[in-house]
Length: 83
Image 1 (cartoon, rainbow, N blue to C red):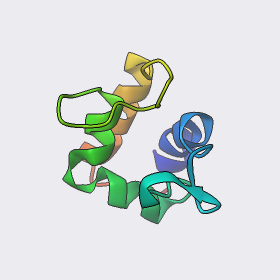
Image 2 (tube, helix red, strand yellow):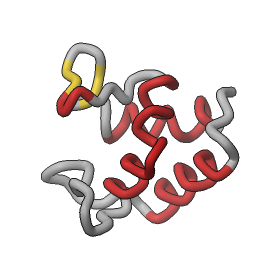
Image 3 (cartoon, rainbow, N blue to C red):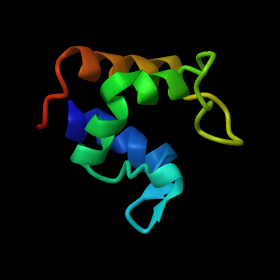
């Protein structure tokens, strides 16, 4: 779910640099609309999976756990449910 998993991951790892007060790269991951926008076109998933051609995120940090990445993937495949 967004509120139970994805938002928690974003708040833990991403919003320090990607929020309305500090939108690095003009990417705001502090709210549902911003996360959906980043998830469209595979930008979010490509970055957290450290895929070639994407900026690896979190920057200067380790990779998200496989479990966290799977939760984001499942949310995207499910059509970005807002719950």
